[in-house]
Image 1 (spheres, rainbow, N blue to C red):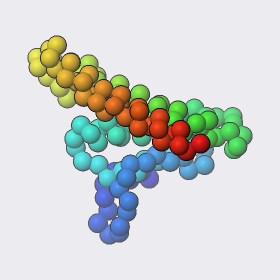
Image 2: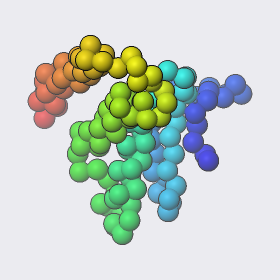
Image 3: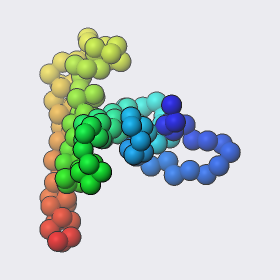
Image 4: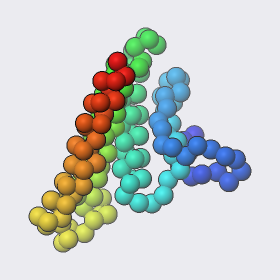
Length: 133
């Protein structure tokens, strides 16, 4: 109930999407100034993936172990949830996509877009991670 989904008009806020574990039992929040579009739909589900990960390690873990083992793994969980949420099959199930327009061309375009977003980023991420250490 304390998550932020709309930009407040009474103060300045950073609108970059983020998920937070507030260190209290079952207190998780998402901060994001959303718009109704496919990119924000994916981003919200990505952030909910972080929340799901927070919930998994919160239970019966000492404070020192309530962090992700690797930041990359945390992002992978978020990306996986986002990918599943935006798949044509799921969008049809939700009623956001008309089944009649989904054909092999649509699916190939969806997969190409996904590859350009995710696979093309891998060499860059590898170089950055290699230089970091």
